[in-house]
Length: 293
Image 1 (tube, one colour):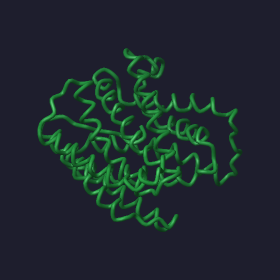
Image 2 (tube, rainbow, N blue to C red; image 1 turned 30 degrees about the vertical axis):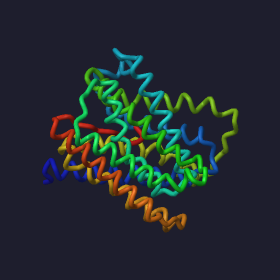
Image 3 (tube, helix red, strand yellow; image 1 turned 120 degrees about the horizontal axis):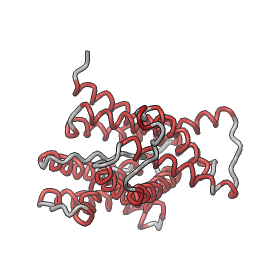
Image 4 (cartoon, rainbow, N blue to C red; image 1 turned 60 degrees about the horizontal axis):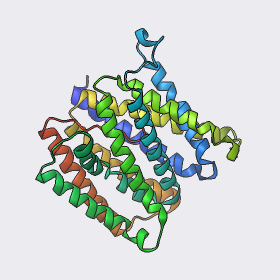
């Protein structure tokens, strides 16, 4: 029988694996229109959330006291999702994953303006270290005018506001409703891209595309379960396994070899994120930023 901390570790590991496979499939799907990929992410992601709706809410599962904040969460979440999908299709996998670790840095800054939180010396130090890491990673891209390096940063900005919105929503709204609304919004928006030319996938591609939504949906559920059973500070370091998976997948599938600058910058970003999470735990605040929720 596993202890709660062991269960938390297991769920976090499974979540990281699922997100890594989802990123892999998104990168593979470059021949399919982005809107069509969004449809599979949203529609198949919905399946899991309908399964966990409490029976007493089946008739009015859509009811919310804060529709405006749900809209903002979905809007910025969609921007983040589009940005990370574009980045995954056009940049080395390890580079995208490395920059995406910077999301807590921007969340720290946003918390000052949206939550009126006070940020102390150590968290400002973490922000500074993280930005140096981002500059090191993106410098080759900016120097060669590779516009795609901006998309992982847009993802971090969007995801950071999403983290703030979820923190505000979770005081009155169930987590499953927050996630369900976002998946529904993705599915709805994707229909407007049909006139731009969707492609009829064969059976193999249909299965792979559906896995984008399935892995994305189950990964977020596993992530939530991980934070439910274990302390955030205990399981969060496992998130950085995603970089290891990205390097392995990138090398064996696309022949990508991360540069020394990418690895150095990633290390600084990881250190920065670790400092922020440690300070949040010290201050008794749990920061649970989901990836593609």
